[in-house]
Image 1 (cartoon, rainbow, N blue to C red):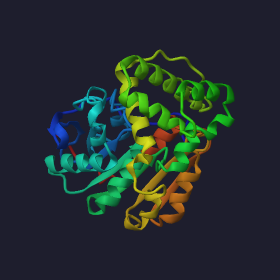
Image 2 (spheres, rainbow, N blue to C red):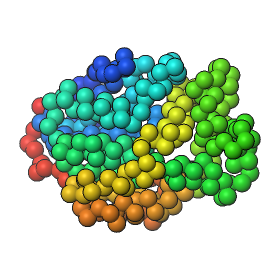
Image 3 (cartoon, rainbow, N blue to C red):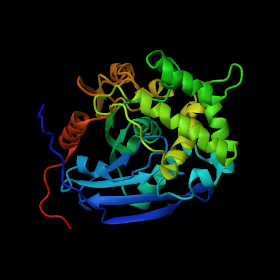
Image 4 (cartoon, rainbow, N blue to C red):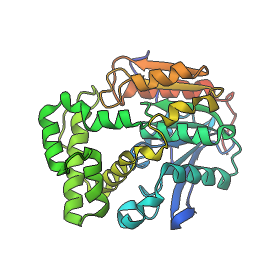
Length: 327
């Protein structure tokens, strides 16, 4: 493994737009790279973090891939933002996100595409592939999650054994009722509270996020100022989804349906030091998935340069022969 991962140069989209979908939503999409290259979709994490800077494009060879990115329903440049339509949060589910992805595919006249994702984006990529296996040529998944009840309870409650001081603050700030899960206690004010309660809950949630990623070698302890424009939609959507187990029908929904995609080639890339999403999830999927390759990066956590390098290598392995010229 190189000490200096190769990163493709910065790339701007050559086309972008908003696509009207169900529930008066508009999904932001953008395309970069080679318009005649192999179609590839990138799904961001969260739920609710959006594409943001667009650095995801650097993982793809721009001469070989036609790269599609979307801001998922309710966040980023998609409209309306979830925080502006709290009464319609029930129209933001995994099933509707899958429908949005299909709508973008059809809008762009793409027959099949490679699907990639990071963190929550891997859950969504898996769920999409299981719903539409004939539309997915390969999967490249980094920081693998399935958003099971077990994973959600780990990240919101059990990992507090490692950070007891911070978890106590997180638990107390939740103001949870007797017997209530912490994630439910945060989802409630973020979905229905006044703006003061929503901001209070979002700030406490953000502090906990910064805590449990702090053992990642690429995310040392830090105090990042609260950004209402980004952090409030994120906290609203992530608690909405996690409170509902990702809107997947069963706590092991993704694992149960691996047979539907077992023929699709996949690379599962995960950091050994990922405290927020332990490697057991990626390992279990790999055991069930004959066509998958599991790549564990020993030195990194939920992100980092070597994970990005392994993603680039995986994408390169699935790319068609180099194409001459770009139009």
